Image (cartoon, rainbow, N blue to C red):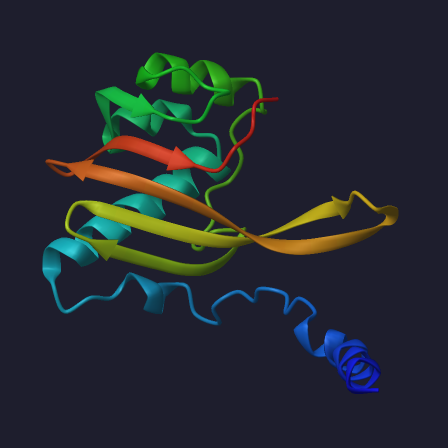
Length: 158
């Protein structure tokens, strides 16, 4: 009888443990603030790089933000600015640069020379193609002498 009661309690509580979808920050600009000027500058560097180069595809601005020997850990793009540009050029041409990042940014955090940005991402549900689910995507950048020197994300090979 105790086992039956425990199983019933577990079944009733399952919805309580369902996913809580990630939500974007209400003010992206507030995410760039820091009491440490260097950390604030690193966060702004990554943020502006994302807006201008990644989202708006102004690949001609890559050198403004990236070191020539930039290290890429995403398995789909080669290391270096040249490899970066080749990969992103296939994804479309320049678009207008927006004042904020189009993606739903959750956080921008900085510690030492690292900046991590998280965003809401939506994907098709592998169990039901008529549905989608939201999850969190993470990108980490290492900044060296005011430029992006290295990048990590959770990308899978395409």
